[in-house]
Image (cartoon, rainbow, N blue to C red; front, side, top):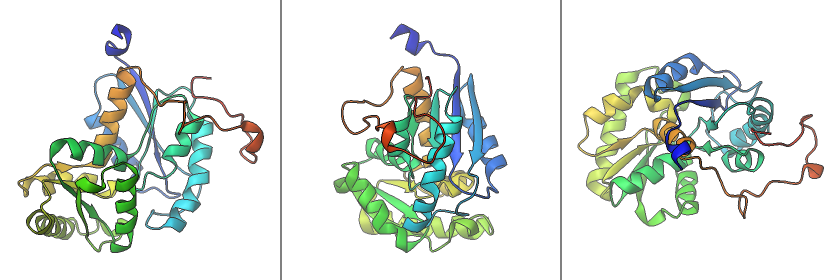
Length: 254
């Protein structure tokens, strides 16, 4: 344990699950600004796929390419962060890798659960509400989820008019607080990361930015020398049944 706690360097791979990535530079700057001393962060995107993830179809398009990046690029890193609130491919990546893999939604909701008795999620679109509720149920947090309220703003439009996005987010968050009893707000898209501080300043409850939460969960997990169990859910898949990736199935430390 002494060795794990004294960890001073860690390499983190961040996978943006989109084919064309206008946020790669800004995400790199944002995450490096949050990272602990000694954390090296590399941000990459996919070799094709959706421009943003707003549906099950988008997720299905992205996951095979995410896994290919995991297999191709995971070696040499201490942890992987998949940068989307849908947590696409997180469970599958854990089956592949022997290092910690963090997803923003899982990290953000679990953190919110520790900060208040009920939390609400600010979803970008109404259609994603059922997805977020299902995710909360899978995490065992349904009773703590006060509501999912939507901004009605697509992912690629979030930063086109930042002032308007912040105004809508604050108004919807206040609705969740006053109507639904939310004590914590979780931003339901990592595309809101750059606007999180502006939203936080105008609310009286904690606001969890899930990309930051995922990074901190990942750093802490690395420092503690922990990774996911192989005893059940994340059992390593049989490589004989996996075809088409052109690379052997092995852990990031393999």
